[in-house]
Image (cartoon, rainbow, N blue to C red; front, side, top):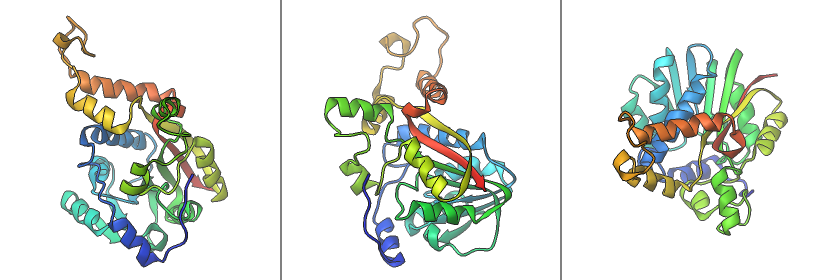
Length: 268
């Protein structure tokens, strides 16, 4: 686990503005599939008809959930991301702010925080802040990368990571991670925040690094004639999509090995 010293809100926003990573641009094939299944997982747990999405990022994931809600509010510390999200979702109310500094009175039936808790300075404070926007019966859904994903376990055995919890240069410098999470440390932060955990799980069984699996999805032998993953003689299907669906379904039963782990919680 790694963390940084305290910064001012202005410093933190400037820091977040400096990270260029975007799901629809970086390793786009894999991140598009992963995002699709993160949304599928969220939709299994959402409640009511109002959504507060923090951060909304470029709006890629929120757009896939939009049909489920009558009211959506998005928050992001990056003005560049907010501009992209607004193009995708012109009907959504946007706020340029750190989660910690969001100042609105509205309450929501669902609050999502996908792939952000690993970035923030004080995750317990952020969880408490997010829960403060919940309606009485509302649900908070939080996704984080899993330090114990099977690809990271393999990397340790290979010697490219010293431990599963180690942050790589990509983690630190490109996407801005401050810490890594296992399910145990993830639960600890929810407990410290005084929240009631109602569901946990994992999204997508990932056996290769992100650049490797993205290359594989773009270039792999998916046609049956190439004796790749496609079954010879079977009815023609989109084997790449079937592979990703199978990784999602398998991961449901093996959350400890998945790329992403999640917790759904309510106010105590």
